[in-house]
Image: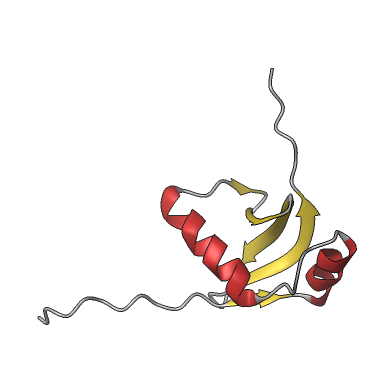
Length: 90
């Protein structure tokens, strides 16, 4: 058994054309890139990201979230970009 640290497997993120369109419509700053979403997604997963309807909302700043779903081939798809929902306090 080797003493070398395990290499972390790369996480592939694909962005749909619909998500890119919503990013522009909702005023996202700069370009929506897979690297940007991947960085935020990988930061969320170890801490136990909340899954809602088989999707994870990844915060991208400026009040926007990328709605990401896992695909059968092992990658993540960004299916749309939405405004962050306001939390209800009861």
